Amino acid sequence: MGAPIVGVVMGSDSDWPLMSGAAKALDEFDVPWEAHVLSAHRTPRRMMEYGSQARRRGLRVLIAGAGGAAHLPGMLAAVTVLPVIGVPRPLPDLQGIDSLLSIVQMPAGVPVATVGIGGARNAGLLAVRMLATSDDALSEVLAQWQARQEEDVIARDASLDR
Ligand code: RP5
Image 1 (cartoon, rainbow, N blue to C red):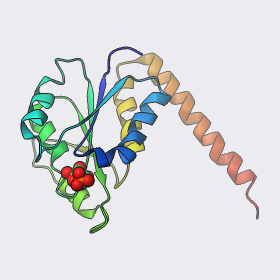
Image 2: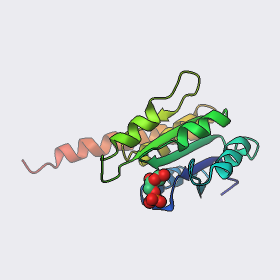
Image 3: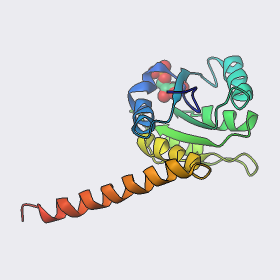
Image 4: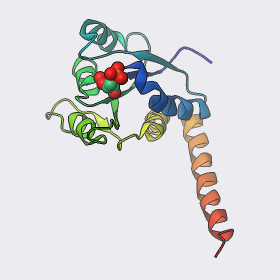
């Protein structure tokens, strides 16, 4: 694989079991990624440095996951022009509603594309779609994958134990 073009970042290493789902989706399309723990609150300077250097380092999309007061995706979006996809992690107290609202309700001018609570796989797939807008080969692979997904659902319907 070549140099990473997607950064998968998270507020804590405890987010990795969820966020690895984004990395797995990227792997399915041979999209090179890197993963780092960056916290908007616990490592603010590291987070700012990563966000402000990300484009220069060759990254094209950032996927950021966090739970609770989930400020990482929004703060990264504030310091980069790259598209940022936010993944709300469900935590026990509020089941991810806190994470979702922290990520989704951004001020106009600082967009974060927010997936559903726990939606790391969709974040990875959304990053692939973003990259495919300027990559015809990847777009074709994505179209074939989507067709297989459709066929699979139809096959499951046919084999339903009614
Ligand atoms: C957030 O706090 C992290 O993104 C994580 O989802 C949550 C809990 O972190 P830990 O206490 O497990 O490190 O900042």
